Length: 206
Image (tube, rainbow, N blue to C red):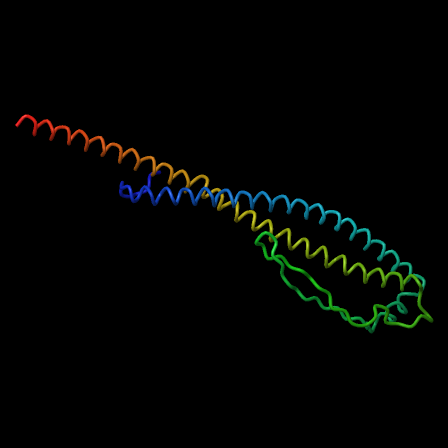
């Protein structure tokens, strides 16, 4: 579609500059989109592996806890865990990844994961709690990666829309308009030459 502009040399120069800028912007955005896709695929692979590892860890912890509970009895197991002594809080900072602000989750830990004495408890209970502490670290890492995947996917979609807007709308419109103005200016120039020749002929005839 040709834009509604005046067919002047000044306008042609302005449109050519806009076209050059649009093409350069399109290339940069396309490169960004490709790099984001590459990095996203790498993170997705990491997330798949982390999910499988977390499922294995959780099953192992659950198994240890079930064995401990069966050895100690449900009442004693519940009593041992009644007053937790460990506190965990999470702070969130941001880092820039290809202009995407992705989160970094940092743990702040206080106290001991084992809140009971060792006299009347099972070693399996100790194992399950120690492994659960490590599991929380893995869980936070997974949450961080999954949030990064979500934010990068949103950025890729936004970049794709901008690339398409440039590629299929703005650049073709600018190209068509510059071509139209160039043709119009050439046509005007030819008309002026013809008019000058006629004036010359008239002057000569007198």
